[in-house]
Amino acid sequence: MSTAPRRGPRIIRTLEDLDGAWLQATLQTGPIASFAVAEIGTGQMSESHRLSLAYADPERAGPPTAVLKLASADPSSRATGVGLGIYAREVRFYRELAPHIGGPLAACYVAGHDEAEGWFTLLLEDVAPASAGDQIAGCSLQQARLAMRELARLHAPSAAGSRSSCGGRASASCSRSTTTPCALRECAGSRPSTAGASTAARRLAAC
Image (cartoon, rainbow, N blue to C red; front, side, top):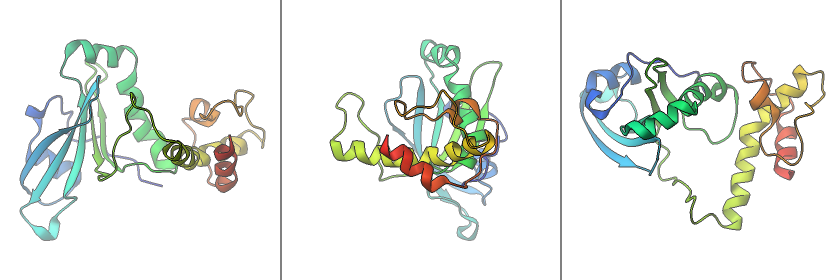
């Protein structure tokens, strides 16, 4: 389980807003001597950038790299993300759900959202050399099995918590036909128990 991310000193709207002082305050490290930015991914409603960081004081250094995710600079794409609530949901996921669930989640250093204008900022752990899936090409059977196992790990603590909070009864909206348990849809505000997580993981993996 990870800890809840900080909300950060301010929202980073574009790369022009990013500086060493913000990174130092967000990562809670010593002074940032320099940083380099490289675009990663092909997001349509957001932008992801890998930050390579150099620290002035090695004894107060933080992670060598991190991933910065921002709202799209394109007004039309950004309006879509805002209109569909995608930005708000992703920030809330890292603030409210990620600290309580399992699975292969990148650590989140900061999660900020400007509700008035729709901008958001996520600073995440860099999980390289892991690579993103290709939504066009699809995946192999082996990759699909791996994804299902990891989804089970991701969902199991919330699924177990939902059964506990409902007196041991699963919600009627849960069924073997879905890989998204009701806990994530209906109990997002609760703090799930990890009791029975292993059983829940096996049940989800078998779906």
